[in-house]
Amino acid sequence: MSQTRLTTQHDEQGAPGRCQLVVVEGAEAGRAVALDGPVLIGSGDGAQLRLSDERVSGRHARVTPEGARFRVTDLESTNGTWLEGVKVSEVVVGVGATLKVGSFGCSPWPGRSR
Image 1 (cartoon, rainbow, N blue to C red):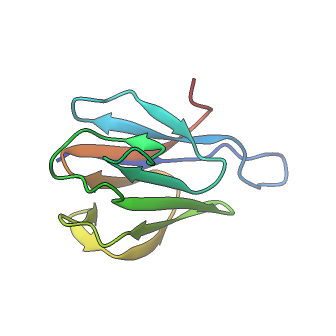
Image 2: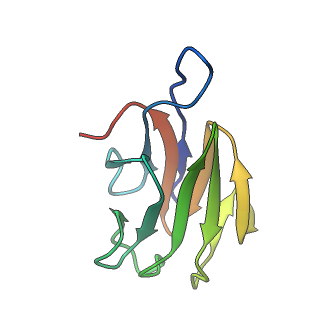
């Protein structure tokens, strides 16, 4: 399975700044989307981070920035969303968390997607 990482840059007051959700493992490694608001991960047309894998549901998971942390919500996907080897339905994670969605790994990283 692949991994996904989430991170943020912080401003002078410690509030999160620009961040992106980056595919760090799998056939689509290097793809990224801005995490300016909720990001839908899935294989369907409506997903902001669209992943081509039969193990990824059309609407698989949502990652929502909440201050300096991220709320990860599995959207009742068939194969689940995984964090550190544990299947999660909803979890709040910090910077550097690695999510597994199908055969992909995704992580938050500083910066903006291109």
